[in-house]
Amino acid sequence: MKIRSKYHIAGRDIKILRGTSELYPQLRRPGQKDYAGDCNLSKSEITINSTHSDDEIFSTLWHESIHALDEIFSIGLNEEQVKKLERGIVMILNDNFVLKHRNNPVAIVEKKKKKK
Image (cartoon, rainbow, N blue to C red; front, side, top):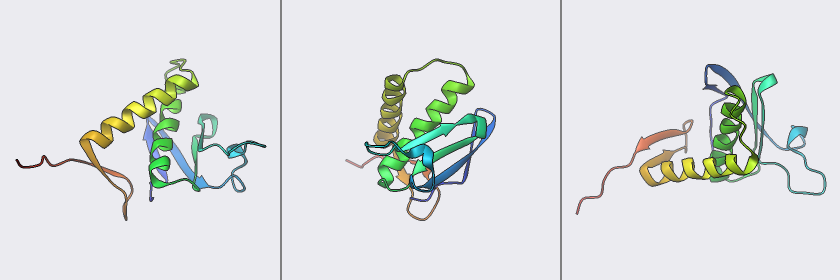
């Protein structure tokens, strides 16, 4: 999945890094499955684990973006709330839009209604 190298989130430019836990130690969890992503606003970076499927990468990008918004706006979400928001947003996008990501950065296009 091809995604942009930088996103603009709530007035901030956030660099999007993709790679494995060998390249990005912040993705490591010794003795457990590596993290899918990490948000570090002090460095203006979101790191995405590139070993995951396109769907997981897309969800992770939303998940980490929610973490960024949570920190920027001092909302105070816990991890379970972030996961629920991520799932809800991704469901809305999947139910109502076509997610095109073959050769372009992720684009969200309105689904065409089926003719009866």
